[in-house]
Image 1 (tube, helix red, strand yellow):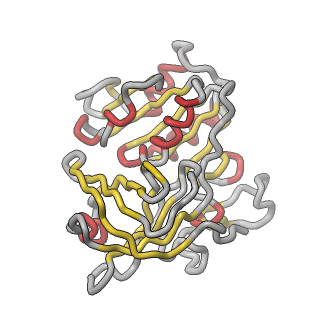
Image 2 (cartoon, rainbow, N blue to C red; image 1 turned 45 degrees about the vertical axis):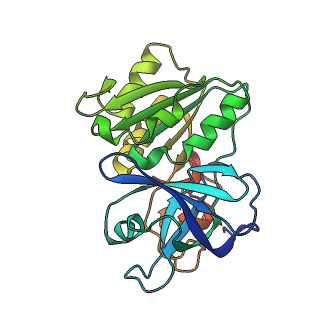
Length: 272
């Protein structure tokens, strides 16, 4: 099963930037003490403050941006006590990061059409993916959805390039009136996206379950970046199992660890 990545480390880092993002989220940049090679999109880190804190168990977050070898950014939604504590950190304060962890997306060849689908902070793995595709001048679609317009977090970061963006909101306040899956269905039926594309999705469980059912019914090739609770991020605590497909790469093993075997999985490898 999965093993700890060779480039993983646990270090104290400094908060070097912070910016509000929507009604309940923020962008946080950290400065690393040692350089890091360029990362595949979709890898993650475990974050926790340094010193006395009520946050004793680190929290997992996708790596959102890598501006250079010593600066990373994270898109964090405040959802509970742990993320609230992280949101209260100021520039110059310290936290511990353990990362980069997990297996991310292998950016598809430039000749392959790719569709990225995200809900809310599920956009986090896709900023780097979109930039890599734009540099390769590859045809790439981004369908980004949320309940309301103000939860299309940091959407301007994806604009201004060659990425074909389709926004969707449940309440119709911005873009397509409906879910990401409904927006995708409309794009496929309108022949604006081909069934032969590679589809990559990340977001809350409702989106991923709905997309998975739709993708299998339509015969699409797809990958999922799973969002789940994690206790350690390194495969020790067994707190993040996902059911493995009997016909996939895990063979007869019934469970995969999201942290070390994922968080990115091919659709045929998990029974999701």
